[in-house]
Length: 492
Image (cartoon, rainbow, N blue to C red):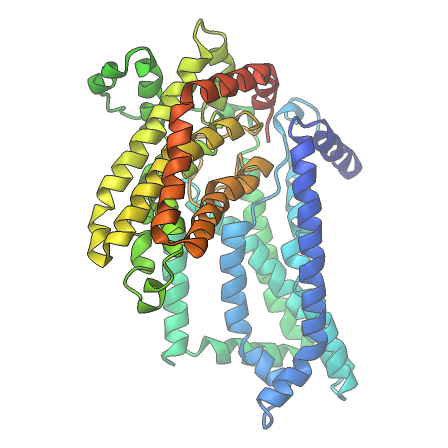
């Protein structure tokens, strides 16, 4: 049965509508994986000598065990933000005579083979070799390596439990960050020395290997709890259940002044306000607006005038970038129905464009108080806003015609990478790097005013040719219409 599951996974990879883009990302990830493996391998062989040189009067093995507490916290945080439980399209299998337990065991077993679980051992095993080479008892070293494997798997399954418990809440990462900060603070101020507790436990296990049964029992309990959580969800009825909640209605009458695109704007505004994932675009506006406070008050950044262009693009275009990069995937749940209606695609795209332009104008107005730090900042923000309106808005709409991944609007927003593909990763180049490069070149070759003028000129050109550009973008969407319908009908 496991062989059959692997065959299905392999076929789903190559038959996916986003296969071409997914394979490109996977190749890039392979190169990154090789880089990190090589880095950890070198670190593993060099770590003993580094610790010996840094702490000449202490045992390197004891020193490393003393910092394992920080490794556990860091690993858990990294996994929460980056590692997701492997997915498997099980709905077609639920009508077949296949035991649900086998499907759950396959998914959990697949998670144990995660790169996050293998990476630490490119440092741990070489460090173990160095311990043996420096006359440490091989039996103790092997026990220590085995314990590290068990602890890594404990972190793996603990992460999935935390994710499942926090999946229904927005800003779900805040409790974990708060809890981690509390543990770090208690250890740092020596109120409770978790470093010593964990170090002593590791030493005790190496002295008496029978103690390894304690973390193994904890690992078994976490695996079983994950098994129960997943098995409860393996019912066709789960996909039919709906949440009954009171919906606050609004006529959004002010949108009617935009004419024939008003219905689409109302649809987008309701979509943003009623769903977790797109609603994050509104909350992120606050983060984007305050972004400049990380730089402008600092004396070290006041002389780096070229950075004003980057901050201006980010502050005024935060909604444009965060919301626009997933056009039209926001509508993927009902895209087929939408495209079957008697509507003009140009109106559909123009409503998205107007919404993004309104956000740029609002963000520029709200960022005017930054003039407190200097008039150059206000001028750079204005130039960046014009560039976002004339150039970036068109770039992000054009890139949307290559989106092929469906988005579940009900999923949590924080660190959710669903719908993210090659398009989203590559968009950063034209959206952020290109305007900054233009600004920096004219600033260095001439002066600050020339850099500002260059951004404004590019933006005005985009505004002047807006209708022609929109016609080209509309044609591209129409050419990709049925490809996107097919792609959005698939599960990622």
